[in-house]
Amino acid sequence: YAFGREITNFVFKNCFISTGGFINVKTNKISRLTKEKYQKSKSKDDLKFIPDKIKEFKPNPKFLSTYNITKPVLALLPGSRQQEIDKILPVMIESSRTFNNTYEIVVAKSDNLPEALYKKYIGRNEVKLVPNEYYNVLFHSKMAVVTSGTATLETALCNVPQVVVYKTNPITF
Image 1: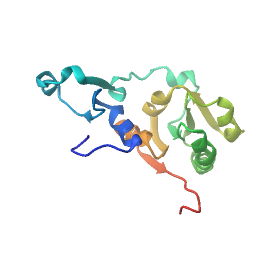
Image 2: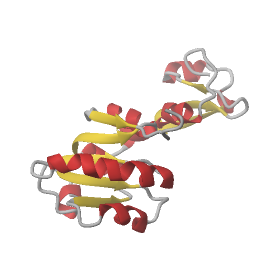
Image 3: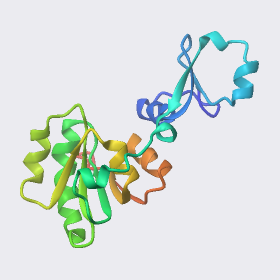
Image 4: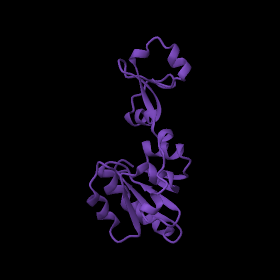
């Protein structure tokens, strides 16, 4: 339960957890508790703290120089599923070409997908692929193009202006 409603959408659960909170390991219910309310809670043993990944993250001050990034960053966050990369990344790259002169276009590579999948779409475009540095890419970005999902919440929590994209099948549209 969150905000008095049962959470049935897995993406919403992940978004809620990614911003920090407690989960009851017996009932699988998520709650926001202050430290004071947690201390007073009768079921403390059943609660497991899920840290706020964004607040605890410390950006790497050498990130930009490590990847030879000299212009402001436009982040492309295409998602973490192969289907998202196949359908959305090409559209993101095409739409970001307008900004090549002003921004460094940086794709945050998901650690669970092979680099070859991304390179198939990046090709010779002026786009940098940054592996396993999702939060560094986000923290150093001036703006982002983000696939709808958990990443949109994380981008908002980092105060990065974003364009949210989602691609559907023509039959379902």
